[in-house]
Length: 277
Length: 306
Image (tube, rainbow over all chains, first blue to last red; front, side, top):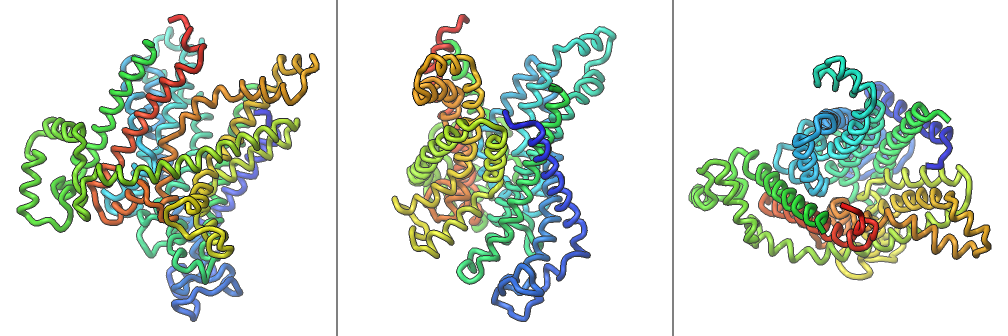
């Protein structure tokens, strides 16, 4: 891309700052949130109130403070993002690196499996799986992890295929290293940059998928605040209380954009390391 | 030709894999497959009958082959709720989804390309950065949220469009929702390609020769920048079907996506699994067709020495 490397790197810094802010806010929620996200604190049960002090972002139909719910919702989103992305990475990296390095029929089988999973529309497969299991955090982790690993697997396989032919690999092989050791000691460290970039981009997709599943009611059970769920809950009240719909959505956009920016910034950083110009 | 045949054969393998995965999810994972097929309200007699019909007492491989047999004959089971044949239900809803998909894909792809053409002409890394940030931001917006916002602003507040349901004026808002991501994606893709192409020598030569810039951009640059697109214009069907799920739910659009979501709410497993299986089949089938078309269109592939 023609985008100046420096500007893309700055984008990365912006993304990184956004992510850090979000993580800090989520971790500090118990101290920073003005109210208990689960308790009705406004005096108006049944009526959402508009943003006004002390309820900076308003309250919902059960009298709960929106800002506090958003902050606690950030905890859930981040937790799901981190764990689900870790699962995605575990599956995707293993399959991608093994397929690329070992090659032959192992590669073919793994790529066929990838094709099969890719044939299923992600959200459809996710809701089918989520419907079959009990709703909850663990289900979310597993379901999201199981549907998202394909792009990482494919990208890594490509990387490994090209790295495989490099001289230092041939040298290591000539020195008599076992294939597993070779894979772990030499290949993996070199694909780490790609893994890191894909982790960031995958996290943004995870957050979107989690929001979608929560919106459909397949995420964490009530009353734990979850951004997607807050949006679906707000549907009944959108005539009276549009803020109930706007703020959680903004939160999602913020979170997803943060990881997208971070991912592209990291991409620019690693490209710069590889092709200093 | 050989290339196509081998790809076709591999697609058949993929289809087989798809049925295998669907079978595993529907019959291997749940603790009582008869229950998942019959529904939570079925009595023991029904369960016993189903167990016998589906051969659930047989070994797994036998079960799989019987499942495969049923699928090949179009028997995807029956819905708990409506007792309707799942395949019939799917075929009923398919046109609505197809209509929405086309209505959203074509205009948004064109819009994205148009935006890219305009922005690519301006040299400079600022425009490139703007395109990148813009498309990343647009791609960060959840579809269901956009849908709700559009409903709120344009349907409820401004009364410009109906509040959901099926029909031509009703398709505008859902199509915009679904198309947002597509437009952003194509805008960035074509922008990148076009910028690369515009740097090429032959463009500079053509301009130096005195050809009007319009002709140069239109004829040479755009055509070459679009070649990678023909692969993608084969529709990212899986992505489209994915996006359709949430959009149809928000707008009450009577398509496949809403069928699946309703089935999930009702724990109607046969319909869920049927929809999932059907979608995957559709994706593979469309990919084969597109592969075939692509092989026909691009002469470089046809004449490549084997």
